Length: 312
Image (cartoon, rainbow, N blue to C red; front, side):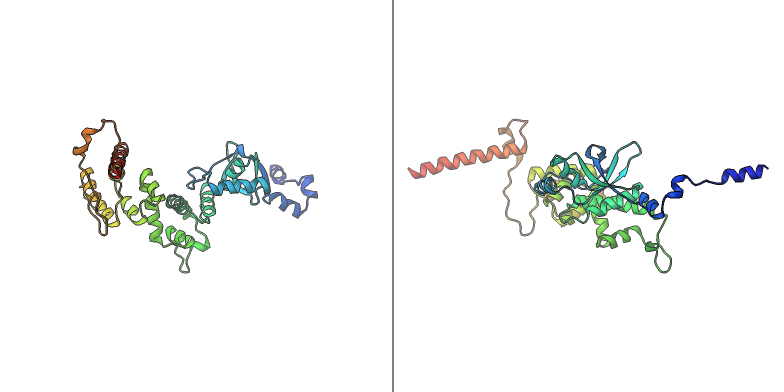
């Protein structure tokens, strides 16, 4: 008798809705739909490495949104505490805000952290102009996600002999870069923000920047201060020397200064003035920039005075 009761309990009776719904309608319920979601309910992806600036291109996008709306929906995932997290569409969200819209069309999809990270990176790497820092952090985030996923390989990740490809090689294949170049980009994430900004601004070339990434944080701070005060940046050879000296524990402020101020091949002759000769003429709280500006101002005044005397 008890066995019959258990059997009855295990039988799931179909609901009225199940009986009268078609397979097509049930499939439609599971299909992803585009929803208009309030911008206030969409938060940015944590650690989003791509900069969303209100530059000229963004203002043009905002004008387009005002006229035509968002033509390609964003992709969001639901948050456990309510609201949504943007996965793909940060620029469209910013353009919508600038256009004065309160909502934007989005596809809502259930994604785990690694799936969301990979989609977020891939959707942004398609852009034309990507700063080195953006690519560096994007590659790092995606590679870490791919390594976590490596415990559950799919058929594409497995070669004919059954061995799994390295995650960094898979990333290199997908990005169209060599594995070594992927690792070199990721090295840039070890740079201090101020030096990394100089790389983005093209004041420091990519190859020297990779070498400088091996310097300790305090060494990088000393390097940045010296670059600012002496208005110079290291060549590849100089960066390689500093890396080697750092690894040997022999890099300090004086060594950095001597390396940066040495004459480089094909470099124009540079006039230098020893600090002790001019520091006594300035207030102690004067910055290097203030000293430079005052010297130039005095020279311009002297030059104009000399011109007037010659015209008499």
